[in-house]
Amino acid sequence: MFEHLLSVLARRDHVSEGERKLIEALPRRIRSFSNGEELVREGTRPNESCHLLSGFAARAQYLPDGKRQLSALHVPGDFVDIHAFLLKLMDHSVVAIGRCEAAFVPHASLLALVEAVPHIGRLFWLSTVIDAAIQRTWITSLGRRSPARHIAYLICELYARLDVIGLVRDNSFEFPATQTDIADMVGLSLVHVNRTIQELRTSGVVVWRNSLITVPDIDRLHDFAEFDPTYLNLIQEPR
Amino acid sequence: MFEHLLSVLARRDHVSEGERKLIEALPRRIRSFSNGEELVREGTRPNESCHLLSGFAARAQYLPDGKRQLSALHVPGDFVDIHAFLLKLMDHSVVAIGRCEAAFVPHASLLALVEAVPHIGRLFWLSTVIDAAIQRTWITSLGRRSPARHIAYLICELYARLDVIGLVRDNSFEFPATQTDIADMVGLSLVHVNRTIQELRTSGVVVWRNSLITVPDIDRLHDFAEFDPTYLNLIQEPR
DNA sequence: CGGCAAATTGACACATCTCAAAGCCTGTGG
DNA sequence: CCACAGGCTTTGAGATGTGTCAATTTGCCG
Image (cartoon, rainbow over the protein chains, first blue to last red):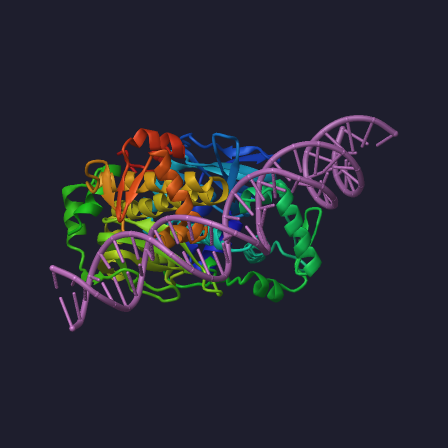
């Protein structure tokens, strides 16, 4: 059930058999969502945190005039809003990108677990901190990268994160986001995103047809996007 | 020494006398920096975390072509890079905005403290999580707010954070950032930032002369920027 | 086969960048 | 105390990037 989560945690630090069992034993409530549905809503005070089991989700904030900005992407294994456990009040929504499935874990159980095993607490803390590092790359992309590079960078991020959990096959992965979703990630208009993606296609670094993204040469894409995966902290060391 | 930090923590949750003493007792090394100096450099593996005592600092990332993006502002009392304690490798630099003074605390002491008192660990965790919430508003501003609104929003954020620690007097505060710094926060060119600030001055919501920012009517600025300070979590509740 | 959401295209308006020059402020040394 | 240097701010003009609107095409699902 939590195998993706455990595989990502174990990729970053040693997780003992006991810790593994305690995490597996967390109580949960499973729910499925269809494209566009909200897993968590801005302004609420959830008493559970939501863990993505399959599919994709994104963080969203809305402006008074109806504009939307997405500030993060979630892949299977992400403890999407573990931060809500401390933040209490949601400052953003979490919305399904395509169909997805999530497990909701009560904050009370999380609190008990991290009180009992501070090391697990640090592992959860670590994932929020890596999350913040990812957000910083989004800020840099929004502010200073060209649209083409920005979108290429996003694809690099996704590719790296999906690869760890075995969701990349034959240099390809499924990604059901619409161009409107992409526009709300990169802060541009739908039309401009459409033209930028065509540019990427023409240059040959990315093949993106329907919901399937193929990267013929990942090194070339990394070069093009000036992407360095170090910030994702997929290297194991004691924390 | 850590009075600003303690006042911000106490604003969010109860901090016992014992906890207060333990934090006050952390070993530290004080250093002063002049404008533009780096307190911490991208790509290094610091073994101390840095706490801002006075002045301002900002997080910075650099692109290969020399462009710079700032992704956060720090005010006195911020445990600027407490996340480095878990992240190990710095994904960004921290640079002084004007003169500032910082206390460097060894990671080993922090680890011992949060192992011994999980609640302090959660308070530190909480500050990284609020930090991330601030970054999300930056993302939304970069992607979907107009330049004028974006800069106004930044001023609202600063005003609220400085107010808590008593650094706002007569609706005014010192802020030694240059327009180049602002440009690197909002992802625009220096020239455009200059014109946008003039727009804000003309509309009368902000008076900004030399390094002094005055907000004649904070409610009006909040309205203009569509700013709601809730996300800063300056309300006390158990965590 | 029909209907609807998503992707694509073209034209034009507007926002933002770049380059280059001029003006202003502040700290420093004479 | 004044003059100067250097950094910061301001201005103008033209080039480029991006947004909006509106129509058309494509692809998927029932």
